[in-house]
Length: 448
Image (cartoon, rainbow, N blue to C red):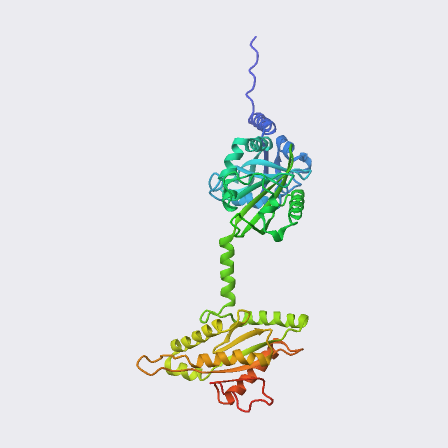
């Protein structure tokens, strides 16, 4: 008797077996697999993902946003790279190394491959494959710490690197450090680290070591700006990063020094430009207010007198109108040269605005300011200008007002006093010096 034919397996049975097969692959896959929808809700989370992240599936699926698995900003970074060309092309992320956050808050280095989950032509979410590379990173670090590898990095570094022992002496330094500090090859070994800085930093080394130790606690290796003292004796500004490390020989301190001389020179140039008048090369009004206020503070401490001269070019508007602004600029530049070269090194000249100039005279009372003011007026009145090449030489005169600082005055008060004195000089016939007049000038603005 023939046995009856067994019925063919149903489509439902085939689908069930396929589903079981896929579920088995999913759960036995050594890589963590996580999928989330467009809102970030996790709907797929395998056993390897649980081993990496430490969360049980019941706390994740349908309950956790995928962004929580990354440090702040990490999920956004992954999405940005997913749609860039850098790691596998747009719409794919291949072998991207980053960090994720375990349930206990620890960071885990991983290698990530991910892609969008598509439903037809619509992006419905994202699926990622996570590989824990903690061991690989540890092996890489051990490799980098090997002597040969370390030497290669150490010597090829652009920045100066100095390793300092617990006794405060240099253990080793790379070629860039010897070049920066003007030592022959190998000459830094055994040198007191504190001696690499100018004498004014004596005693500062302990504070720097403590600073590095505190940075090690919070893992924030911040840079500071300081000055080093090469053997040439010419100080150099550097940006220094310090790191302290424990090893079998005790604690060592590593200083990374970057020469910032060029940057500092540029900063100084920009600073000078910000406080200097381009035409006359004297300081500008803003810098006058700063230096004059410093003198006020000094007066309050020491009662050291100081005065200012307010200098105005006589009939300058008429000169400009007749010969043009280019010729007028020559007059202003010549006056700037006269002020810069005709006073003491402690005195400072400024272009206050237009054809008005100021001279700040420290340690000078109003009576004593008369002599340098007269000298300036006399010398400038003897200069000859040729605004018309075929005409006769022209001379230009100055009216100068003097004001001495008085207790309770502001800088503006002092300038107004000098301005009234200068008006008095103009009303008196110009080409003269005047102190503060006893009565206000009768004429309205006579300066031009």
